[in-house]
Length: 211
Ligand SMILES: Cc1cc2nc3c(=O)[nH]c(=O)nc-3n(C[C@H](O)[C@H](O)[C@H](O)COP(=O)(O)O)c2cc1C
Image (cartoon, rainbow, N blue to C red; front, side):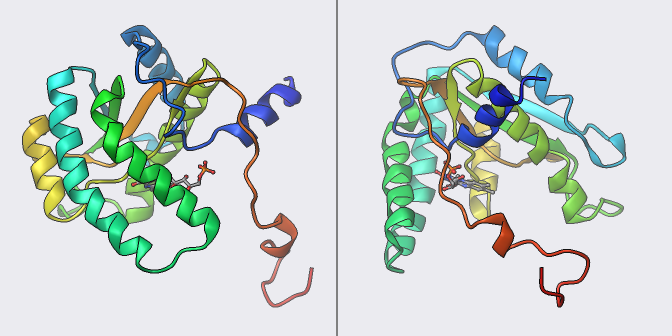
């Protein structure tokens, strides 16, 4: 395996918002190709309860974008009020840009889990959500390696889940987990992000022991 390539992919797959190419169409086949790869991800008890709703109809995307603006706009306003640091402020500015252009993003992918976390006999939260997020990330990596960008968003909470459910005609037992806007990127150079060094957030054997 060429780790120069895989390390580059893993360290430069970013949340892309401002550099989504809103004018270049995305073929259904490339979405399916990336989703096919995503299905190699792990699931708890090998359940594979993932389902994928892909929105490429402009009328449906417009409805979703309108609702997204109504629920994400106020959330961002609240977060700005908490005086975030410079890096976080950049993220919020970029998230606000996404709100404005969402209807023009060519494809929105809604990963779902068949089943509900609150139904009797359902699995525990770590397994429920943990059985879809690895696949979502694989999907995003596969997109990146083909010149497409994406960003994981999570608008399905509280009363909004019901409103999205109505727009998307989701059956009751289908839980929408995320919405991933997808487009080709403008340019393909992305950099590793600044992160807390691993040495200061990992320990060996017992948390109380110095590394
Ligand atoms: C669970 C989760 C929820 C997220 N929700 C949103 C969201 O609602 N809107 C958004 O624009 N980005 C969202 N993001 C993307 C993060 O803002 C982004 O990953 C983070 O700022 C780091 O940027 P990077 O991925 O480019 O390193 C989410 C990411 C995760 C993992």
